[in-house]
Image (cartoon, rainbow, N blue to C red):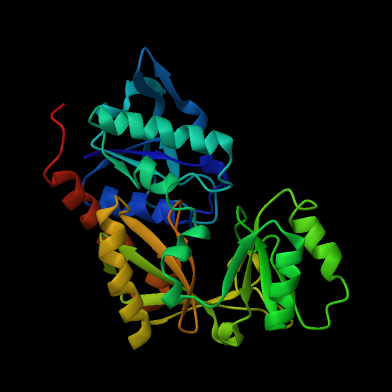
Length: 324
């Protein structure tokens, strides 16, 4: 296959741990070729969705901590239907430009392109709001821009987490205990004085054992998760916020959650999903660019990249593949 990655600039990727790079290596190991493009390289002309794509090759013996892990050829314009698979791996934020990109990807799919995760599925599954479909798997959760509702929620549960709907890596997350003196200031800042909706959730003490990232590929759970354990004095387990990643087998409850959600999400065009689970509760459903392939593979020996590559091959070969 010729696979196109739409992602952030390659020099910004940390090749030794980046999931997109792990995907690339697994695909190359199975004989596939790669091209890359930025979100801004997508365009539509006379109804056709096209891209300025750069072919790349991986350097086998490159320093994984350096920036010489790939070589590239001259970029060329091509229709998205000219690739066997298109992987949308642009990191959040999910801003207006990202929204436009999902519409272009959806248009490309209508023309025969195979996009993973699909444009419509990414757009229709906002990563924090999606848990509203599964209240039986979540702690009490409120999404609102109303200061009075947020204060009442805090008064009821006494210990809550509040966070923006478009954040990533733990940015903008606050824990509000019962005696929080800066309650008003925090809520005013996060909601932009009532102009932006945010999420509030009852605090889950099991965060001390880690915020688990459970990967689902092609509807099937990876048998190991990465528990992101907060640093001392921290509430957030995100690796970007200093959390420590510890791979561990899925618990019985993890399997139960993954087996319930996996087939449903796969049927909606989501080849790769990252569930965030604290204790026994789902806190987010990540669909834009789920990570932790490298950490799980390194610590357990289970080749997550190979599992993904095989699932991608199966998805491309499935009925519905357009003839180019």
